[in-house]
Length: 507
Image (cartoon, rainbow, N blue to C red; front, top):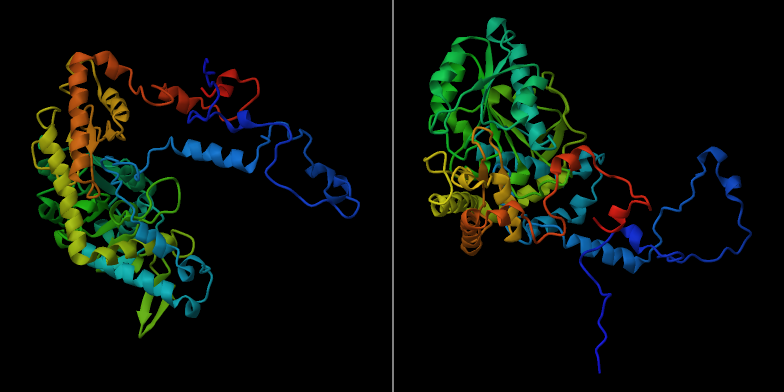
């Protein structure tokens, strides 16, 4: 007997929710009116009533909705599936314990306008996190208000501006030049400009370090307010001249701001304050395992030296005796930078991470992150071009120089990695390296996953020579292939219409 072929079955190639719509299908049931229902016009003013009907709203049941979004959720790559080797972003694993602690009712349900006497536990937590971050950075002043790294960076630059504005003469008011290396994060010059500074770029050496001769030349031109420096820098190398760099800036009358984006390579090992740094921001999502990305609430604390503390945002959480209180009496403060006291849930998670690891555990995480990056660098150095020969810290940088001969570029390599089950690394950044691939495995990745990633990268190199068309056309395993990303960004289709055949077919 012939077996009937099944042509309709559940699939992960989920269409639009509109395509699941069936007339009359609903996910609710309401009791019947036991009184005569009034006309809608009797309840709402005519000008508030819709006149376009609801023809475009999908009619679906609860199970339709659940299955639709569950199936689509399987399309997403997440940290629970594998490593995110995004250099400069530090996509480390977010411990589940942190999430459990953040959901403790006394923390999660506390209203931000609760009086101090009813929020002593929360204020104590903020205070203890401030103390811990102060110890980790070697800087006594801490504000947890900034809602992200970029805002923490902006806060730090505003502290420098406030410090200079309070001073006297050319040594302060007339200093409006901020020096920034050519490999810096893009937010650095943006923050400096927003704070009223003029940006001058410092060249990098062939070794990937700050060019000391050029730094001195720029300082000699006068008007230097400060330096914005990432350390380890954006090519993953520790600035071995950091103390000399700080001395040069201080001698020129400026202050040193350090971008703390790469603190995952320093925690428990080295402190910016001991290097001569005056102010730094931290990314709790990068270094202390709070959730990263997604546009949700973040936390980018700003830490500073004692001479800058009076300019920190208000209010400050302080302790008197055994009580914690909010201090608004800071006449030289730059003011609030965030509503209330910052994103408290992120602080709970960060303190949980710090307490879970302790001093030894934090140092071990740092050392493991550096070890993992150097392992990748060592394994791939003969396959991909390494623009700098110095030992990397927490991230390794390569370029497509060896593969370009076969017509394969960084974007092709990144897309092909998707077929191997890996999220691509950061590509084409920093700009000082042509065809850059910035790889940061973090301490979260074990050797088995590192070896699999290395093997995939080597396989792609082989394919670049033997089957270049295969790499050019990647990815092949995804529901949507190689997109015209520029067109998609510039001309996004944001609304569905019944006559849009391409969308109705799930294209």
